[in-house]
Image (cartoon, rainbow, N blue to C red; front, top):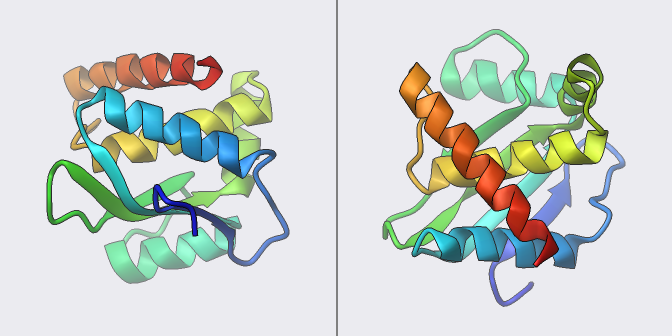
Length: 143
């Protein structure tokens, strides 16, 4: 297990992130830029049916989504949680929006991390702030 505690898995599909170590470093920079530290964070890539089942059983929602974030943090400065990401949904959204798959995937990953950091996108103002933070974190990938 990496020292940051950021773990990358695939659950019911054969998928792997192109460079898990680069992903861990990038997510750590994003978390650190908000004054927090990464604890145990699990990024789980899965299919639409797998994530739909989580959405139905744990959140009582009956629709497809690209990510579900479960915050397990007890200390607001030490992030812990699980990010379940539907690779199917990300791929479809990327095609619909005209983005590269990898770009959309990174945006969805950082979106989940921002939820762990306490950002919310339930209203227009929150969504705009979340998008701003997503863009700022995406810039940290190349550092």
